[in-house]
Image (cartoon, rainbow, N blue to C red; front, top):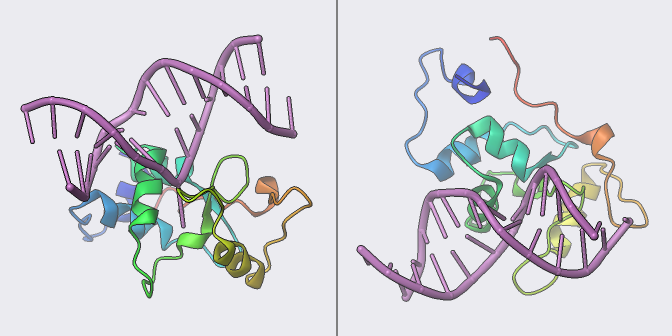
Amino acid sequence: MNDYHNLHRMGNRPPRSLYKRIYDVVRMIPTGRVATYGQIASIVGKCTPRQVGYAMAAVRSGSDVPWHRVINSKGKISVRAYGAPCAIQRRLLETEGVKFNANSRVDLNKIKWAGPIKEI
DNA sequence: CCTATGACTGGTC
DNA sequence: TGACCAGCCATAG
């Protein structure tokens, strides 16, 4: 039993596909906070960071999933297949008040999401 | 069914 | 602080 299952204990049934479970968790990240791929994976359970990244890549524009709030464990926006980080992502985060240092890194200790509420 | 391909991570150097 | 690497495993073709 993990945090994700706790969240669905009260009558809500977990969605079937892995991606849907991942998106569900990503939707819980509050505005102005960020989460890492590994963090999402561990909350979802039975999932690895790579799958989370893959799920983010599959998000369609116009989706209600706040994909931009998911960054890597180094506190930076991940480099995409075409060789550069998504510029939009940083802009969206800055709009929410997230600060980047000179190294294009955010302070995970300050703005990393604490995770879903434990012990429902 | 088999192979290639990643929006990753933690360890080592 | 990097750079490099093996392990990772769902998808696409």
